[in-house]
Length: 298
Image 1 (cartoon, rainbow, N blue to C red):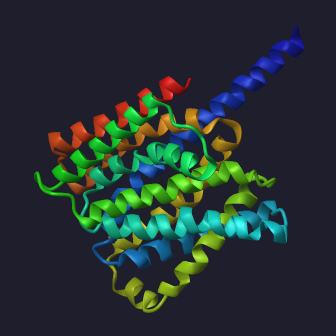
Image 2 (spheres, helix red, strand yellow):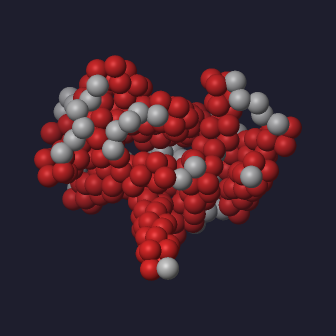
């Protein structure tokens, strides 16, 4: 009887810990578009991506010095490189460039289209079948994305910057698919170290004039980049990798619906943004399509 209680208590403790990880991750990623918008006043999109992941890489290096790291197997190097390319290099260059024009709220809402692209990519790369109900959900979600894009700055035709946010979502969806498919046998810290370090390497090509940009930037912009590196980049990546290790992707991704609510609250508080009803309506369409899809899947 005592053993049974201990086992149940341990399971409850592990479940609670997972939900804490999810809550912190959502808060970090909800802050991310706000931090990027603040940093864009002083930095280029490329410098923001490089600097935040240099900070994240240093943070992870300090953790490794304390906890150790699994040696990388050379045969796994290409897979880690691909994961880093899509989740760090491509995703953040695209989303930072797009956010030069797209508001923090719209950017966060558009990022919720990731599960829709995840399904499409699974079908395209891994030949998984898409049912009619799923196609309807995907179509509804994309219509919602068009509404968000069109209503971000008053009702207008979609612009290239908004499409870059959607392309960034595609990059992240590819990362999600490959992360599960590769099934690399490493602990969470080692996995994220190799993914982030290898994803940061291509960004070093933008290191020209970085030191000058740092010296000329305002303290608010430097603080934003510091927070981006420590929390959405390093901490959230680690916690989310641990969540994906213990929870199915379809279930875990449900909790990311809260991210736009966090982003909207922070954007209103710190940036003074007031999302239009058109943007909010488009966001509801995207979220409804994903909820419907996941309910259908279950």
